Length: 484
Length: 95
Image 1: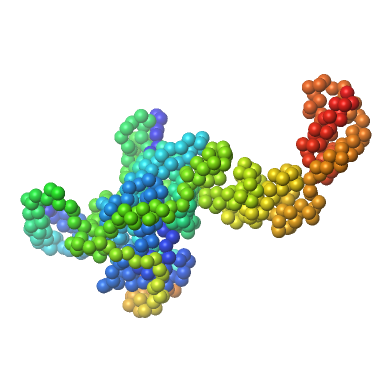
Image 2 (image 1 turned 90 degrees about the vertical axis):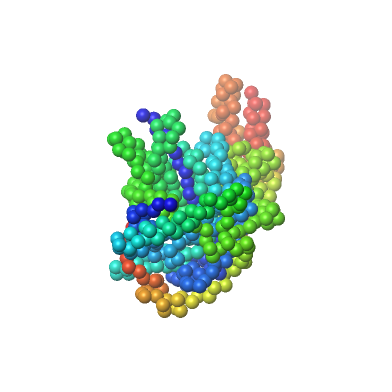
């Protein structure tokens, strides 16, 4: 039987605020345990939460970025459950009236097609603390520094049909929140955590199959792996006459399998009710419009501009706009050299290749965007040829010079465009290679084009790579043809 | 509105309340009467009445995003039953 996979995601994005969502405690990562957990975060009697305006602003801007409606009123509710890292006995969250209504996020698939994934809603909530089960001799240690950290939970519709689509969605979401600066998007530190809902159904069937939720899948690669092995598990199970049960599962990347964590509690087990400690939040048009005015250029808009205003191909535009760091680097390099296509080729070519090899992110590049731009400017104004440029780039990478101009000067890479100088080199090459000249003269006319390569190579070598290759090429052709 | 023995036990479990069977029987009666009283609301015409999220007719004030809380870990941990290395200790929980 042909099976179809159906995937929906719940992504928790940690908002990049200074303080907690309901208290003035710091949200900085990596502090000593419980040094950033104040009376409100600890759920002490008599404390009252007060909402952080910045968390609200970030949520609203996210909503505007995905074309969602921002309701005038939103409400915080209590989600009740018991766990030691949740001191109040409930998580303050939103359910019936979340801050962000339905919207859409465009994802770009491998073949370049763009799909819209519908967003059901996004809501604000607080994070819980962390439990340490290992080092306390039969006890569990609780660190509440993370308790109360603002999260935006973004809930998609079940619109994805493959592991690739799901990871493309998370990438798109990651690009949006990091472009906007509302989250650092650091998956390793838990700033973006994904719960993946997966089900399968016979191809052509409209009704959804029973889904399993895979918790806390925290890298782009693991998202695909987790989905692939969960899909396989469900299909095997059904084909063997079994039934998928609705449950929460954990992905184990070492064993490449998902395993059951607990059967999924029904939503009403959480006994949601409006939080009496928090009043309804009212957001008027003026506030929302003000937030709209603070929106930066988003990935899709940038992609569009790269294509239309800069004349880049759809592929180049989508690669360069894929992350804010990449886009900023490219634009800076382009500004320094004044040539979008040249900058695009180098950023995606030589630079990306070196970065990949070194395992570095573009934000960690040893060659700055300005340095690269200045190098490219020297290609553009014919000071150096492409071959010399690669040499200069390698030197910049190895910090053998501050600027491209310094390296060009120090290594004598300046391109020779003086016709007389090039002519002398070319004449010498022709004199030195009589055998090849005879072969050229005796060759079929349509073979000669290829044979020129040999002479050009010799001339470039003789000039130590500094001759202008176009000039060399033209000159050799005319000189050889004159001998026919 | 009828509430049954099983409903009471389930609610008690969700709230982590330890109640015995005799108590549960009594709560079936008490809770049913409370629910009946609330049920009187369904007799009222609420068309055009907006759902009320909070009895106060006010909206949530927002605070500036500033980390202003000092570290008072030592004070807070004085009242904790067990602490170690800055952590609050609780009976072991394993998923």
